[in-house]
Length: 561
DNA sequence: GTACAGCGGG
DNA sequence: TTCACACACTCAT
DNA sequence: GAGTGTGTGTCTCCCGCTGTACCT
Ligand SMILES: [Mn+2]
Image (cartoon, rainbow, N blue to C red; front, side):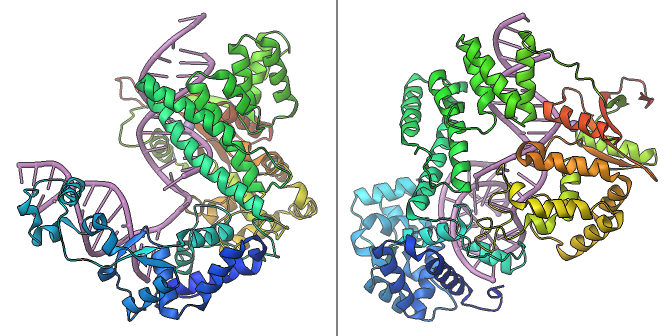
Protein backbone atom coordinates (compact mmCIF):
# COMPACT_ATOMS: atom_id res chain seq x y z
CA UNK A 1 0.00 0.00 0.00
CA UNK A 2 1.29 3.42 -0.92
CA UNK A 3 -1.24 5.47 1.00
CA UNK A 4 -4.81 5.42 2.23
CA UNK A 5 -6.98 7.60 -0.01
CA UNK A 6 -9.69 7.78 2.62
CA UNK A 7 -7.34 9.35 5.16
CA UNK A 8 -4.68 11.16 3.16
CA UNK A 9 -6.02 14.22 1.33
CA UNK A 10 -2.86 14.29 -0.80
CA UNK A 11 -3.34 10.75 -2.07
CA UNK A 12 -3.62 11.92 -5.65
CA UNK A 13 -0.29 13.76 -5.47
CA UNK A 14 1.43 10.93 -3.63
CA UNK A 15 0.47 8.51 -6.36
CA UNK A 16 1.73 10.77 -9.12
CA UNK A 17 4.98 11.40 -7.27
CA UNK A 18 5.43 7.66 -6.78
CA UNK A 19 4.85 7.01 -10.46
CA UNK A 20 7.20 9.77 -11.62
CA UNK A 21 9.97 8.57 -9.33
CA UNK A 22 9.41 4.98 -10.45
CA UNK A 23 9.77 5.76 -14.14
CA UNK A 24 12.69 8.13 -13.60
CA UNK A 25 14.44 5.38 -11.68
CA UNK A 26 13.76 2.66 -14.21
CA UNK A 27 13.40 4.39 -17.54
CA UNK A 28 15.46 7.57 -17.36
CA UNK A 29 17.43 6.44 -20.42
CA UNK A 30 14.25 6.34 -22.48
CA UNK A 31 13.29 9.98 -22.00
CA UNK A 32 14.33 12.78 -24.27
CA UNK A 33 16.29 15.66 -22.79
CA UNK A 34 13.18 17.82 -23.01
CA UNK A 35 11.01 15.29 -21.22
CA UNK A 36 13.58 14.86 -18.49
CA UNK A 37 13.73 18.61 -18.09
CA UNK A 38 9.96 18.82 -17.73
CA UNK A 39 9.89 16.07 -15.16
CA UNK A 40 12.60 17.77 -13.13
CA UNK A 41 10.65 21.00 -13.33
CA UNK A 42 7.56 19.22 -12.14
CA UNK A 43 9.38 17.81 -9.15
CA UNK A 44 10.64 21.29 -8.28
CA UNK A 45 7.17 22.82 -8.20
CA UNK A 46 5.67 23.85 -4.88
CA UNK A 47 3.41 21.22 -3.38
CA UNK A 48 0.06 22.92 -4.05
CA UNK A 49 0.91 23.23 -7.74
CA UNK A 50 1.96 19.61 -7.98
CA UNK A 51 -1.22 18.64 -6.18
CA UNK A 52 -3.31 20.58 -8.66
CA UNK A 53 -1.37 19.14 -11.58
CA UNK A 54 -1.89 15.65 -10.19
CA UNK A 55 -5.63 16.26 -10.07
CA UNK A 56 -5.94 17.83 -13.50
CA UNK A 57 -3.85 15.25 -15.35
CA UNK A 58 -6.33 12.61 -14.20
CA UNK A 59 -9.25 14.51 -15.65
CA UNK A 60 -10.59 14.63 -19.14
CA UNK A 61 -9.93 18.30 -19.66
CA UNK A 62 -7.99 19.86 -21.11
CA UNK A 63 -9.95 23.00 -20.18
CA UNK A 64 -10.96 23.83 -16.63
CA UNK A 65 -12.88 26.67 -15.09
CA UNK A 66 -10.89 28.02 -12.20
CA UNK A 67 -14.06 28.69 -10.22
CA UNK A 68 -15.02 25.03 -10.49
CA UNK A 69 -11.72 23.69 -9.17
CA UNK A 70 -12.12 22.92 -5.48
CA UNK A 71 -9.92 20.39 -3.79
CA UNK A 72 -9.65 20.13 -0.07
CA UNK A 73 -5.90 19.53 -0.14
CA UNK A 74 -5.33 22.72 -2.14
CA UNK A 75 -6.03 25.86 -0.11
CA UNK A 76 -5.33 28.50 -2.72
CA UNK A 77 -6.21 27.06 -6.08
CA UNK A 78 -5.54 30.26 -7.98
CA UNK A 79 -2.06 30.58 -6.55
CA UNK A 80 -1.33 26.96 -7.47
CA UNK A 81 -2.62 27.59 -10.97
CA UNK A 82 -0.53 30.71 -11.39
CA UNK A 83 2.59 28.70 -10.62
CA UNK A 84 1.62 26.08 -13.17
CA UNK A 85 1.17 28.78 -15.77
CA UNK A 86 4.49 30.38 -14.86
CA UNK A 87 6.27 27.06 -15.47
CA UNK A 88 4.34 26.38 -18.70
CA UNK A 89 2.48 23.37 -17.30
CA UNK A 90 -0.72 25.25 -17.97
CA UNK A 91 -1.98 28.37 -19.69
CA UNK A 92 -4.78 30.89 -19.17
CA UNK A 93 -7.02 30.75 -22.19
CA UNK A 94 -10.20 32.37 -20.91
CA UNK A 95 -9.65 35.71 -22.56
CA UNK A 96 -8.63 34.33 -25.96
CA UNK A 97 -11.25 31.62 -26.31
CA UNK A 98 -14.79 33.02 -26.50
CA UNK A 99 -15.96 29.56 -27.57
CA UNK A 100 -14.84 28.13 -24.24
CA UNK A 101 -16.59 30.92 -22.36
CA UNK A 102 -19.75 29.43 -23.80
CA UNK A 103 -18.94 25.74 -23.83
CA UNK A 104 -17.82 25.61 -20.21
CA UNK A 105 -20.96 27.35 -19.00
CA UNK A 106 -24.12 25.43 -18.37
CA UNK A 107 -27.39 26.15 -20.03
CA UNK A 108 -28.73 27.36 -16.70
CA UNK A 109 -25.89 29.85 -16.33
CA UNK A 110 -26.44 31.26 -19.78
CA UNK A 111 -30.10 31.54 -19.03
CA UNK A 112 -29.55 33.48 -15.81
CA UNK A 113 -27.26 35.83 -17.72
CA UNK A 114 -30.25 36.57 -19.89
CA UNK A 115 -28.66 35.71 -23.20
CA UNK A 116 -30.94 32.82 -24.02
CA UNK A 117 -34.03 34.95 -23.91
CA UNK A 118 -32.25 37.74 -25.79
CA UNK A 119 -31.50 35.51 -28.75
CA UNK A 120 -34.58 33.31 -28.48
CA UNK A 121 -32.55 30.20 -27.73
CA UNK A 122 -34.49 28.90 -24.74
CA UNK A 123 -35.50 25.71 -26.53
CA UNK A 124 -32.29 25.07 -28.48
CA UNK A 125 -29.81 22.30 -27.77
CA UNK A 126 -26.61 23.26 -26.00
CA UNK A 127 -24.20 22.91 -28.96
CA UNK A 128 -26.55 24.99 -31.10
CA UNK A 129 -26.78 27.67 -28.40
CA UNK A 130 -22.99 27.88 -28.15
CA UNK A 131 -22.64 28.13 -31.90
CA UNK A 132 -25.32 30.81 -32.23
CA UNK A 133 -24.00 32.95 -29.38
CA UNK A 134 -20.47 32.67 -30.70
CA UNK A 135 -21.61 33.86 -34.10
CA UNK A 136 -23.34 36.82 -32.42
CA UNK A 137 -20.11 37.72 -30.58
CA UNK A 138 -22.13 37.64 -27.44
CA UNK A 139 -20.29 39.37 -24.59
CA UNK A 140 -20.22 37.65 -21.21
CA UNK A 141 -18.26 38.16 -18.03
CA UNK A 142 -14.88 36.50 -18.55
CA UNK A 143 -14.27 33.27 -16.67
CA UNK A 144 -10.72 32.23 -15.82
CA UNK A 145 -10.06 29.11 -17.84
CA UNK A 146 -7.00 26.97 -17.38
CA UNK A 147 -5.67 24.82 -20.18
CA UNK A 148 -3.46 21.95 -19.17
CA UNK A 149 -0.24 21.72 -21.18
CA UNK A 150 2.21 18.83 -21.31
CA UNK A 151 -0.70 16.47 -20.79
CA UNK A 152 1.22 13.98 -22.87
CA UNK A 153 4.05 13.93 -20.39
CA UNK A 154 2.11 12.20 -17.64
CA UNK A 155 0.42 9.95 -20.19
CA UNK A 156 3.90 8.92 -21.29
CA UNK A 157 4.91 8.20 -17.70
CA UNK A 158 1.78 6.15 -17.15
CA UNK A 159 2.42 4.18 -20.32
CA UNK A 160 6.00 3.51 -19.27
CA UNK A 161 4.88 2.45 -15.83
CA UNK A 162 2.06 0.10 -16.80
CA UNK A 163 3.30 -0.99 -20.20
CA UNK A 164 -0.21 -0.63 -21.59
CA UNK A 165 -2.77 2.03 -22.25
CA UNK A 166 -5.71 0.75 -20.26
CA UNK A 167 -4.33 1.09 -16.76
CA UNK A 168 -4.01 4.52 -15.21
CA UNK A 169 -3.25 6.14 -11.89
CA UNK A 170 -6.73 5.23 -10.72
CA UNK A 171 -5.37 1.71 -10.42
CA UNK A 172 -3.45 2.95 -7.38
CA UNK A 173 -6.64 4.22 -5.75
CA UNK A 174 -8.68 1.15 -6.50
CA UNK A 175 -5.92 -1.09 -5.19
CA UNK A 176 -5.31 0.87 -1.99
CA UNK A 177 -9.06 0.84 -1.38
CA UNK A 178 -8.88 -2.94 -1.56
CA UNK A 179 -11.13 -3.19 -4.60
CA UNK A 180 -8.40 -4.79 -6.69
CA UNK A 181 -5.77 -7.06 -5.27
CA UNK A 182 -2.58 -8.02 -7.02
CA UNK A 183 0.07 -10.55 -6.15
CA UNK A 184 3.14 -9.07 -4.56
CA UNK A 185 5.98 -9.92 -6.93
CA UNK A 186 9.62 -8.99 -6.66
CA UNK A 187 10.06 -6.79 -9.71
CA UNK A 188 13.74 -7.74 -10.07
CA UNK A 189 14.48 -4.67 -12.16
CA UNK A 190 12.41 -5.95 -15.04
CA UNK A 191 11.38 -3.37 -17.56
CA UNK A 192 8.37 -3.02 -19.77
CA UNK A 193 10.55 -1.43 -22.43
CA UNK A 194 14.23 -1.68 -23.13
CA UNK A 195 14.61 1.28 -25.45
CA UNK A 196 12.87 4.33 -26.73
CA UNK A 197 12.30 2.72 -30.10
CA UNK A 198 10.62 -0.22 -28.42
CA UNK A 199 8.44 2.16 -26.45
CA UNK A 200 7.54 4.13 -29.56
CA UNK A 201 6.75 0.98 -31.49
CA UNK A 202 4.38 -0.14 -28.73
CA UNK A 203 2.59 3.18 -28.63
CA UNK A 204 2.29 3.23 -32.41
CA UNK A 205 0.85 -0.25 -32.54
CA UNK A 206 -1.62 0.62 -29.78
CA UNK A 207 -2.75 3.61 -31.77
CA UNK A 208 -3.02 1.65 -35.00
CA UNK A 209 -5.08 -1.01 -33.23
CA UNK A 210 -7.47 1.61 -31.96
CA UNK A 211 -7.94 2.91 -35.49
CA UNK A 212 -8.19 -0.59 -36.91
CA UNK A 213 -10.91 -1.28 -34.39
CA UNK A 214 -12.88 1.73 -35.59
CA UNK A 215 -12.52 0.62 -39.19
CA UNK A 216 -13.60 -2.88 -38.24
CA UNK A 217 -16.80 -1.46 -36.77
CA UNK A 218 -17.31 0.56 -39.93
CA UNK A 219 -16.83 -2.53 -42.09
CA UNK A 220 -19.53 -4.30 -40.13
CA UNK A 221 -21.90 -1.38 -40.46
CA UNK A 222 -21.31 -1.20 -44.19
CA UNK A 223 -21.96 -4.90 -44.59
CA UNK A 224 -25.45 -4.27 -43.29
CA UNK A 225 -26.08 -0.89 -44.88
CA UNK A 226 -24.04 -0.73 -48.09
CA UNK A 227 -22.80 2.71 -49.08
CA UNK A 228 -20.28 2.94 -51.91
CA UNK A 229 -18.82 6.28 -50.84
CA UNK A 230 -18.20 5.21 -47.28
CA UNK A 231 -16.92 1.86 -48.47
CA UNK A 232 -14.34 3.52 -50.71
CA UNK A 233 -13.23 5.66 -47.79
CA UNK A 234 -13.06 2.61 -45.55
CA UNK A 235 -10.93 0.72 -48.02
CA UNK A 236 -8.47 3.52 -48.45
CA UNK A 237 -8.37 3.86 -44.68
CA UNK A 238 -7.58 0.18 -44.31
CA UNK A 239 -4.91 0.33 -46.98
CA UNK A 240 -3.37 3.37 -45.37
CA UNK A 241 -3.35 1.69 -42.00
CA UNK A 242 -1.90 -1.48 -43.48
CA UNK A 243 0.98 0.49 -44.93
CA UNK A 244 1.67 2.12 -41.57
CA UNK A 245 2.12 -1.13 -39.68
CA UNK A 246 5.74 -1.39 -38.62
CA UNK A 247 7.55 -4.53 -39.57
CA UNK A 248 8.59 -6.76 -36.73
CA UNK A 249 11.89 -5.35 -35.61
CA UNK A 250 14.50 -7.16 -33.65
CA UNK A 251 13.61 -5.25 -30.49
CA UNK A 252 10.32 -6.96 -29.72
CA UNK A 253 8.71 -7.29 -26.35
CA UNK A 254 5.82 -9.62 -25.56
CA UNK A 255 3.19 -6.91 -25.66
CA UNK A 256 4.37 -5.63 -29.02
CA UNK A 257 4.35 -9.07 -30.61
CA UNK A 258 0.83 -9.64 -29.36
CA UNK A 259 -0.29 -6.20 -30.43
CA UNK A 260 1.09 -6.65 -33.92
CA UNK A 261 -0.53 -10.07 -34.21
CA UNK A 262 -3.93 -8.73 -33.25
CA UNK A 263 -3.50 -5.74 -35.53
CA UNK A 264 -2.77 -7.96 -38.53
CA UNK A 265 -5.80 -10.11 -37.75
CA UNK A 266 -8.03 -7.11 -37.34
CA UNK A 267 -6.95 -5.54 -40.63
CA UNK A 268 -7.17 -8.89 -42.38
CA UNK A 269 -10.69 -9.45 -41.19
CA UNK A 270 -11.85 -6.00 -42.25
CA UNK A 271 -10.27 -6.35 -45.67
CA UNK A 272 -11.83 -9.76 -46.06
CA UNK A 273 -15.21 -8.35 -45.14
CA UNK A 274 -15.03 -5.72 -47.86
CA UNK A 275 -13.92 -8.32 -50.37
CA UNK A 276 -10.25 -7.42 -50.72
CA UNK A 277 -9.05 -10.96 -50.31
CA UNK A 278 -5.56 -10.55 -51.65
CA UNK A 279 -4.74 -7.74 -49.26
CA UNK A 280 -6.39 -9.63 -46.42
CA UNK A 281 -4.14 -12.56 -47.23
CA UNK A 282 -1.10 -10.32 -46.97
CA UNK A 283 -2.17 -9.31 -43.47
CA UNK A 284 -2.79 -12.88 -42.37
CA UNK A 285 0.62 -13.89 -43.66
CA UNK A 286 2.23 -11.53 -41.16
CA UNK A 287 1.12 -13.45 -38.09
CA UNK A 288 1.08 -16.93 -36.61
CA UNK A 289 -1.77 -16.18 -34.30
CA UNK A 290 -5.01 -18.12 -34.76
CA UNK A 291 -7.03 -17.97 -36.88
CA UNK A 292 -4.58 -16.54 -39.42
CA UNK A 293 -3.73 -19.88 -41.01
CA UNK A 294 -7.35 -20.91 -41.30
CA UNK A 295 -8.21 -17.60 -42.95
CA UNK A 296 -5.32 -18.04 -45.38
CA UNK A 297 -6.56 -21.48 -46.36
CA UNK A 298 -10.12 -20.23 -46.84
CA UNK A 299 -8.97 -17.36 -49.02
CA UNK A 300 -6.75 -19.64 -51.10
CA UNK A 301 -9.71 -21.96 -51.70
CA UNK A 302 -11.92 -19.02 -52.61
CA UNK A 303 -9.34 -17.71 -55.03
CA UNK A 304 -9.05 -21.13 -56.65
CA UNK A 305 -5.56 -21.99 -55.49
CA UNK A 306 -6.26 -25.34 -53.86
CA UNK A 307 -2.58 -26.36 -53.77
CA UNK A 308 -1.76 -23.33 -51.66
CA UNK A 309 -4.74 -23.98 -49.40
CA UNK A 310 -3.71 -27.59 -48.96
CA UNK A 311 -0.23 -26.49 -48.02
CA UNK A 312 -1.60 -24.18 -45.36
CA UNK A 313 -3.86 -26.92 -44.02
CA UNK A 314 -0.89 -29.24 -43.74
CA UNK A 315 0.98 -26.52 -41.89
CA UNK A 316 -1.90 -26.26 -39.42
CA UNK A 317 -1.81 -29.99 -38.74
CA UNK A 318 1.95 -29.94 -38.47
CA UNK A 319 2.41 -27.38 -35.76
CA UNK A 320 -0.72 -25.54 -34.74
CA UNK A 321 -2.27 -26.47 -31.40
CA UNK A 322 -5.55 -24.62 -31.85
CA UNK A 323 -8.34 -27.23 -31.98
CA UNK A 324 -10.55 -25.06 -34.14
CA UNK A 325 -7.98 -24.62 -36.87
CA UNK A 326 -6.98 -28.27 -36.64
CA UNK A 327 -10.59 -29.36 -37.10
CA UNK A 328 -10.89 -27.12 -40.14
CA UNK A 329 -7.69 -28.41 -41.71
CA UNK A 330 -8.62 -32.00 -41.03
CA UNK A 331 -11.99 -31.52 -42.64
CA UNK A 332 -10.63 -29.89 -45.76
CA UNK A 333 -7.85 -32.40 -46.28
CA UNK A 334 -10.04 -35.40 -45.73
CA UNK A 335 -12.63 -33.95 -48.09
CA UNK A 336 -9.91 -34.04 -50.75
CA UNK A 337 -8.89 -37.54 -49.71
CA UNK A 338 -5.44 -36.25 -48.82
CA UNK A 339 -5.56 -37.72 -45.37
CA UNK A 340 -7.61 -40.53 -44.01
CA UNK A 341 -9.40 -39.13 -41.04
CA UNK A 342 -8.76 -41.77 -38.41
CA UNK A 343 -12.36 -42.25 -37.38
CA UNK A 344 -12.19 -39.84 -34.48
CA UNK A 345 -14.71 -41.73 -32.43
CA UNK A 346 -16.83 -39.95 -29.91
CA UNK A 347 -15.84 -41.02 -26.44
CA UNK A 348 -18.27 -39.03 -24.30
CA UNK A 349 -21.87 -39.98 -23.51
CA UNK A 350 -24.94 -38.24 -24.80
CA UNK A 351 -28.32 -37.91 -23.18
CA UNK A 352 -31.53 -36.08 -23.90
CA UNK A 353 -33.71 -34.28 -21.42
CA UNK A 354 -37.18 -32.92 -22.01
CA UNK A 355 -37.91 -29.85 -19.95
CA UNK A 356 -40.63 -27.23 -19.97
CA UNK A 357 -38.23 -24.42 -20.75
CA UNK A 358 -38.96 -20.85 -19.82
CA UNK A 359 -37.42 -17.66 -21.12
CA UNK A 360 -36.44 -16.00 -17.87
CA UNK A 361 -33.60 -18.38 -17.00
CA UNK A 362 -30.75 -19.80 -19.02
CA UNK A 363 -31.05 -23.39 -20.14
CA UNK A 364 -28.10 -24.23 -17.91
CA UNK A 365 -29.81 -22.82 -14.82
CA UNK A 366 -32.99 -24.71 -15.59
CA UNK A 367 -31.10 -27.96 -15.92
CA UNK A 368 -29.34 -27.24 -12.64
CA UNK A 369 -32.71 -26.80 -10.96
CA UNK A 370 -33.93 -30.03 -12.48
CA UNK A 371 -30.85 -31.95 -11.33
CA UNK A 372 -31.29 -30.59 -7.84
CA UNK A 373 -34.76 -32.07 -7.77
CA UNK A 374 -33.07 -35.43 -8.34
CA UNK A 375 -30.78 -34.92 -5.36
CA UNK A 376 -27.64 -33.85 -7.17
CA UNK A 377 -25.80 -30.60 -6.78
CA UNK A 378 -24.83 -28.90 -10.02
CA UNK A 379 -22.76 -25.78 -10.62
CA UNK A 380 -22.19 -23.83 -13.80
CA UNK A 381 -18.40 -23.82 -13.59
CA UNK A 382 -17.50 -24.11 -17.27
CA UNK A 383 -13.87 -23.11 -17.83
CA UNK A 384 -13.38 -22.01 -14.25
CA UNK A 385 -13.08 -25.45 -12.70
CA UNK A 386 -9.81 -26.94 -13.91
CA UNK A 387 -8.31 -23.56 -14.67
CA UNK A 388 -9.03 -22.61 -11.08
CA UNK A 389 -7.44 -25.77 -9.74
CA UNK A 390 -4.42 -25.10 -11.91
CA UNK A 391 -4.17 -21.55 -10.59
CA UNK A 392 -4.33 -22.75 -7.00
CA UNK A 393 -1.77 -25.52 -7.34
CA UNK A 394 0.72 -23.56 -9.44
CA UNK A 395 0.17 -20.11 -7.92
CA UNK A 396 3.75 -19.36 -7.00
CA UNK A 397 5.06 -20.56 -10.34
CA UNK A 398 2.65 -18.37 -12.28
CA UNK A 399 3.93 -15.44 -10.26
CA UNK A 400 7.58 -16.50 -10.20
CA UNK A 401 9.82 -13.46 -10.71
CA UNK A 402 11.15 -14.59 -14.07
CA UNK A 403 13.12 -11.77 -15.76
CA UNK A 404 10.88 -9.62 -17.90
CA UNK A 405 7.64 -11.11 -16.60
CA UNK A 406 6.73 -8.50 -13.98
CA UNK A 407 7.57 -4.83 -14.16
CA UNK A 408 4.95 -3.00 -12.08
CA UNK A 409 2.95 -3.80 -8.95
CA UNK A 410 -0.49 -4.04 -10.59
CA UNK A 411 -0.07 -7.01 -12.93
CA UNK A 412 -2.64 -9.74 -12.91
CA UNK A 413 -0.41 -12.06 -14.92
CA UNK A 414 3.16 -12.45 -16.12
CA UNK A 415 3.85 -10.62 -19.38
CA UNK A 416 4.89 -13.84 -21.13
CA UNK A 417 1.89 -15.95 -20.08
CA UNK A 418 0.66 -16.38 -23.63
CA UNK A 419 4.09 -16.98 -25.12
CA UNK A 420 4.94 -20.46 -26.40
CA UNK A 421 7.98 -20.59 -24.15
CA UNK A 422 6.10 -19.70 -20.96
CA UNK A 423 6.45 -23.24 -19.63
CA UNK A 424 9.99 -23.65 -20.87
CA UNK A 425 11.15 -20.58 -19.01
CA UNK A 426 9.79 -22.13 -15.80
CA UNK A 427 10.68 -25.70 -16.69
CA UNK A 428 12.39 -26.80 -13.49
CA UNK A 429 9.74 -25.18 -11.32
CA UNK A 430 6.99 -27.01 -13.16
CA UNK A 431 8.82 -30.32 -13.06
CA UNK A 432 9.40 -30.08 -9.34
CA UNK A 433 5.80 -29.09 -8.73
CA UNK A 434 4.42 -31.94 -10.81
CA UNK A 435 6.51 -34.30 -8.69
CA UNK A 436 5.26 -32.83 -5.43
CA UNK A 437 1.69 -33.02 -6.60
CA UNK A 438 1.87 -36.79 -6.94
CA UNK A 439 0.72 -36.79 -3.33
CA UNK A 440 -2.96 -36.10 -2.68
CA UNK A 441 -2.08 -34.65 0.70
CA UNK A 442 0.17 -32.09 -0.96
CA UNK A 443 -2.48 -31.27 -3.54
CA UNK A 444 -5.12 -30.70 -0.89
CA UNK A 445 -2.89 -28.67 1.37
CA UNK A 446 -1.65 -26.45 -1.45
CA UNK A 447 -5.21 -25.83 -2.52
CA UNK A 448 -6.36 -24.95 0.98
CA UNK A 449 -3.32 -22.85 1.74
CA UNK A 450 -3.50 -20.76 -1.41
CA UNK A 451 -7.26 -20.46 -1.24
CA UNK A 452 -6.92 -18.83 2.19
CA UNK A 453 -3.73 -16.84 1.63
CA UNK A 454 -4.45 -15.57 -1.86
CA UNK A 455 -8.18 -14.99 -1.48
CA UNK A 456 -9.29 -12.35 -3.95
CA UNK A 457 -5.90 -11.73 -5.51
CA UNK A 458 -6.06 -11.49 -9.30
CA UNK A 459 -4.86 -14.60 -11.10
CA UNK A 460 -5.52 -15.25 -14.78
CA UNK A 461 -6.67 -18.78 -14.00
CA UNK A 462 -8.83 -18.11 -10.97
CA UNK A 463 -12.37 -16.72 -11.01
CA UNK A 464 -12.86 -16.34 -7.27
CA UNK A 465 -16.52 -15.47 -7.37
CA UNK A 466 -17.62 -18.49 -9.31
CA UNK A 467 -15.83 -21.06 -7.17
CA UNK A 468 -15.71 -22.16 -3.58
CA UNK A 469 -13.18 -24.13 -1.60
CA UNK A 470 -15.44 -27.07 -0.78
CA UNK A 471 -16.18 -27.66 -4.46
CA UNK A 472 -12.53 -27.51 -5.46
CA UNK A 473 -11.57 -29.87 -2.64
CA UNK A 474 -14.31 -32.26 -3.68
CA UNK A 475 -13.13 -32.31 -7.28
CA UNK A 476 -9.47 -32.54 -6.30
CA UNK A 477 -10.18 -35.48 -4.05
CA UNK A 478 -12.16 -37.35 -6.68
CA UNK A 479 -9.94 -36.75 -9.68
CA UNK A 480 -7.14 -39.26 -10.19
CA UNK A 481 -3.79 -37.51 -10.39
CA UNK A 482 -3.07 -39.08 -13.75
CA UNK A 483 -6.16 -37.38 -15.16
CA UNK A 484 -5.53 -34.05 -13.49
CA UNK A 485 -1.91 -34.08 -14.56
CA UNK A 486 -2.90 -34.77 -18.15
CA UNK A 487 -5.42 -31.91 -18.07
CA UNK A 488 -2.84 -29.50 -16.65
CA UNK A 489 -0.25 -30.50 -19.22
CA UNK A 490 -2.73 -30.01 -22.01
CA UNK A 491 -3.63 -26.59 -20.63
CA UNK A 492 0.02 -25.68 -20.45
CA UNK A 493 0.72 -26.83 -23.98
CA UNK A 494 -1.14 -23.83 -25.38
CA UNK A 495 -3.04 -21.89 -22.78
CA UNK A 496 -4.40 -19.41 -25.27
CA UNK A 497 -6.51 -21.88 -27.19
CA UNK A 498 -6.98 -24.61 -24.59
CA UNK A 499 -8.24 -22.72 -21.58
CA UNK A 500 -11.74 -22.77 -23.03
CA UNK A 501 -14.15 -25.41 -24.22
CA UNK A 502 -14.84 -27.18 -20.91
CA UNK A 503 -18.34 -28.56 -20.26
CA UNK A 504 -20.91 -26.27 -18.67
CA UNK A 505 -21.85 -28.13 -15.53
CA UNK A 506 -20.10 -29.81 -12.66
CA UNK A 507 -22.62 -32.28 -11.26
CA UNK A 508 -21.82 -33.71 -7.86
CA UNK A 509 -23.24 -36.81 -6.29
CA UNK A 510 -22.20 -38.10 -2.89
CA UNK A 511 -18.93 -39.71 -3.95
CA UNK A 512 -18.64 -38.94 -7.66
CA UNK A 513 -18.82 -36.07 -10.03
CA UNK A 514 -19.49 -35.74 -13.70
CA UNK A 515 -19.23 -33.00 -16.26
CA UNK A 516 -22.12 -32.17 -18.53
CA UNK A 517 -22.21 -29.89 -21.52
CA UNK A 518 -25.72 -28.53 -21.99
CA UNK A 519 -27.04 -28.01 -25.46
CA UNK A 520 -30.36 -26.26 -25.68
CA UNK A 521 -32.49 -26.07 -28.79
CA UNK A 522 -30.51 -24.41 -31.56
CA UNK A 523 -27.12 -24.74 -29.87
CA UNK A 524 -24.41 -26.93 -31.30
CA UNK A 525 -21.11 -28.32 -30.05
CA UNK A 526 -18.09 -26.26 -30.99
CA UNK A 527 -14.93 -27.96 -32.09
CA UNK A 528 -12.84 -27.00 -29.08
CA UNK A 529 -15.66 -28.27 -26.86
CA UNK A 530 -15.56 -31.61 -28.66
CA UNK A 531 -11.81 -31.74 -28.20
CA UNK A 532 -12.04 -31.27 -24.44
CA UNK A 533 -15.02 -33.62 -24.10
CA UNK A 534 -13.07 -36.40 -25.75
CA UNK A 535 -9.90 -35.63 -23.84
CA UNK A 536 -11.69 -35.60 -20.49
CA UNK A 537 -13.47 -38.83 -21.30
CA UNK A 538 -10.14 -40.39 -22.24
CA UNK A 539 -8.87 -39.49 -18.79
CA UNK A 540 -11.69 -41.46 -17.23
CA UNK A 541 -13.73 -38.47 -16.16
CA UNK A 542 -17.47 -38.95 -16.59
CA UNK A 543 -18.31 -36.58 -19.38
CA UNK A 544 -21.44 -36.16 -21.39
CA UNK A 545 -23.48 -33.88 -23.58
CA UNK A 546 -27.07 -33.30 -22.55
CA UNK A 547 -29.38 -32.15 -25.28
CA UNK A 548 -32.32 -30.31 -23.80
CA UNK A 549 -35.53 -30.31 -25.75
CA UNK A 550 -38.63 -28.27 -25.13
CA UNK A 551 -41.02 -30.61 -23.44
CA UNK A 552 -43.98 -31.46 -25.63
CA UNK A 553 -47.42 -30.64 -24.34
CA UNK A 554 -47.45 -33.68 -22.08
CA UNK A 555 -46.49 -32.81 -18.51
CA UNK A 556 -44.09 -35.64 -17.78
CA UNK A 557 -40.41 -34.97 -17.26
CA UNK A 558 -38.36 -37.88 -18.39
CA UNK A 559 -34.72 -38.57 -18.85
CA UNK A 560 -33.81 -40.63 -21.87
CA UNK A 561 -30.36 -42.06 -22.00
C1' DG B 1 -40.86 16.41 -13.40
C1' DT B 2 -37.97 11.92 -14.78
C1' DA B 3 -34.32 9.23 -17.18
C1' DC B 4 -29.99 8.71 -18.58
C1' DA B 5 -25.05 9.21 -19.73
C1' DG B 6 -20.73 10.87 -18.55
C1' DC B 7 -17.66 12.22 -15.34
C1' DG B 8 -15.05 12.37 -11.13
C1' DG B 9 -13.76 11.06 -6.33
C1' DG B 10 -12.22 7.86 -3.09
C1' DT C 1 -12.41 -1.89 -23.19
C1' DT C 2 -11.60 -8.80 -23.69
C1' DC C 3 -13.12 -13.07 -24.28
C1' DA C 4 -16.16 -17.06 -24.31
C1' DC C 5 -20.43 -18.62 -25.15
C1' DA C 6 -25.14 -19.13 -26.97
C1' DC C 7 -28.10 -17.83 -30.44
C1' DA C 8 -29.88 -15.80 -34.94
C1' DC C 9 -29.39 -15.24 -39.56
C1' DT C 10 -28.03 -16.29 -44.49
C1' DC C 11 -26.60 -18.96 -48.18
C1' DA C 12 -25.63 -22.90 -50.77
C1' DT C 13 -26.41 -27.44 -50.93
C1' DG D 1 -24.80 -27.55 -42.25
C1' DA D 2 -21.34 -24.16 -42.57
C1' DG D 3 -20.12 -19.59 -41.99
C1' DT D 4 -20.82 -15.33 -40.08
C1' DG D 5 -22.56 -11.83 -37.09
C1' DT D 6 -24.90 -10.34 -32.69
C1' DG D 7 -26.09 -10.24 -27.79
C1' DT D 8 -24.81 -11.19 -23.13
C1' DG D 9 -22.19 -11.69 -19.08
C1' DT D 10 -17.70 -11.12 -17.31
C1' DC D 11 -13.88 -8.87 -17.00
C1' DT D 12 -11.04 -4.19 -14.32
C1' DC D 13 -14.87 -0.57 -8.34
C1' DC D 14 -19.03 1.81 -7.49
C1' DC D 15 -21.53 5.56 -5.95
C1' DG D 16 -23.19 10.29 -6.42
C1' DC D 17 -23.44 14.41 -8.86
C1' DT D 18 -24.23 17.19 -12.85
C1' DG D 19 -26.06 18.51 -17.08
C1' DT D 20 -29.03 17.55 -20.72
C1' DA D 21 -32.92 15.90 -23.23
C1' DC D 22 -37.32 14.56 -23.22
C1' DC D 23 -41.64 13.80 -20.91
C1' DT D 24 -46.46 13.13 -18.71
MN1 LIG E 1 -23.60 -25.37 -23.35
